[in-house]
Image (cartoon, rainbow, N blue to C red; front, side, top):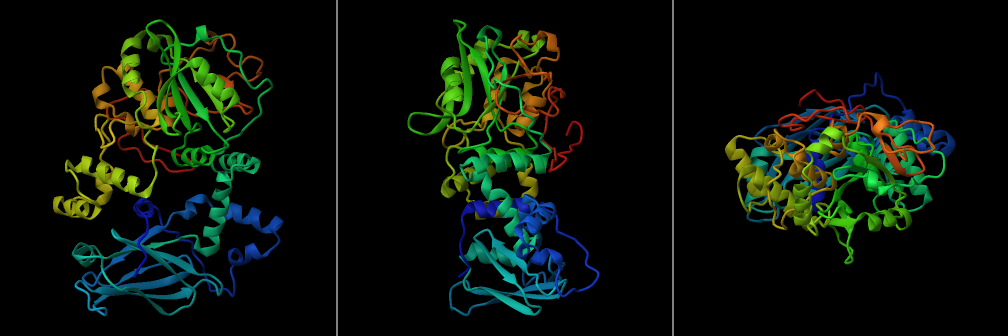
Length: 495
């Protein structure tokens, strides 16, 4: 039987629906193609060339279509084989209640003698794969369908076919580019820096020493934003990929808050508690700053983004403090990443969008079909800030900060039409909320640096960059329909 893979893999293929096919043209069939044999050359020669040819995006499979007995054959152009046809036949070779099927794939017209195509086949119940090296008809067996729901799905929608558009060697090269980000060594930090330089154009210019600022907390106020970039340790690799996907030049955020007595605190979603859980926490500034200076193994780079005086005058300290206290100790949204938890969270999110309760993925697909929606249309329905999930209220790092801003009145009078869960870290530091007059920045801000930044970097060896900083006014339904793909991250205005 086709292997039954974790939900996260299925999610990857759903996302891949929006990934374009590789349409490189080859005029004639060659005995070999240079990309096929580059890894066989000396490393000093081969890897720089492959690095220029391949990107981490090549890890995403491209959706080529779906085939079922009712919709006939499917034809497409592959990365290796340029002429491909697939069709599906039902059978009941095992004598089971719902039978199985045979997927036929005929591949021909390879662009070289040494290439191969890798495919992923998927239904809502099954994710599996195969590869083809020879020009001929191949078959893939689904010995038994999971049940009536899978049978009916395949009858109406078919088996989805995805192409690994970079081929075998290209996929391995893309993995080579990603795996070092998580190695938890000095190599990891260099890999994260190299990745961000290559794929996002980050510069990582070194700051003059000392790499820590002598801060006067009297100059820090409620609502001042903390943009944090981690390039090593447990979160280094994850933040690097998050930056690349979203276009943000920071991977974590926190917010400064003062209590009724004027004491300075830091509100942060994604703080380790004593049980080792990542939760929302409100910590005294001294405790938070001491940890970042002496105990954080991620080599954090931190920038303080002071609010503009007009925004500071508008900021409701009491309301922001009350919101932060209500959320203190609540789950960080990425606290658990077990496949079962991810599946439940995913199903809950889809149920919220449909106004249903308790439907699992197959039933959700049936509901979508009944309503005449596509899965892509369902995914574009904005997340609502007031939705409560089975584990209670939770928030990502940036959603927590922006919810604090919302409670403090910074989004008024359009607060009700802003869903902060639609905003990324890049969107947050791009909001026109922050100081735009360098003469009003604290005297210790960027002290000793001959490059004048529009914000205060308070920790880090490399000078932080925040492209688009402080340039965007909030607007109703902000970011609810904003496409953005690397490497340019271009977006229409007011999307």
